[in-house]
Image (cartoon, rainbow, N blue to C red; front, side, top):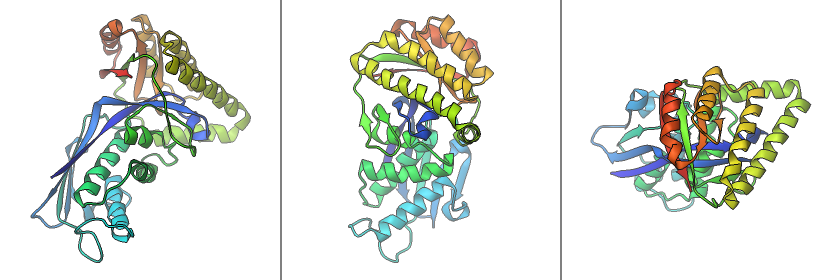
Length: 320
């Protein structure tokens, strides 16, 4: 048996703008994670069991563009064709090994917490280890990005990057990955609206807005860039009291992009009324999560307020 795990993630600043070459800041959330077990099996074929998404199927019964099937097919293709030593069963013209793959996740689907990327990274790590085909973080990240295209259409690459490296990152599409230093730990409360909101849809809608009036939206993206740049400096210096206002500014810009929603705005207001220092939606929007910056001692009170305002569940995490 081979096992692997990958964390969830939150985008702190810069969602949507990151698709257009602007920076974004994101951090892993260890409190939610995807877990994968790969076992040799006596049953013919490769069986995938993912109860969280009500899936129990043999690999060949899934469409080739199903994200889980794509991970397995593409990984085995790479292992077979790579010039480097790799697995025991997947080399040459041999058959795929008989496997039983168990996938579980505590990350809500389509919530902005990187569920798809986490499952992809955990599955890739477990499979590559099981067939003795070692992959570096850089290779896993590049591979996961290709799978992310099936989930999101035109992904920014930030989900797979944060999940793969499990570190806070300052990310600009197409540029070298930068992890960023946290000068002082800070506490975030995540409030889940419970509304599934596929990133692919909101990204596509923003694309339509941008194509219709590029000058207007490029100005918005430039303002988001300034916020992300300032936020990185604030976090690096440990000036956490200044971070809340930047979050509020970023949320207002995301409202202009039409990716907020009444549910998200209600949680935004509830967080502030309970004493949050700042708040914003995190991820694609239209549902998913709000994140609130809080003093550590206020975390439980803010989480309770979010629950009373309709959050389906809350997570308290520390970025450090």
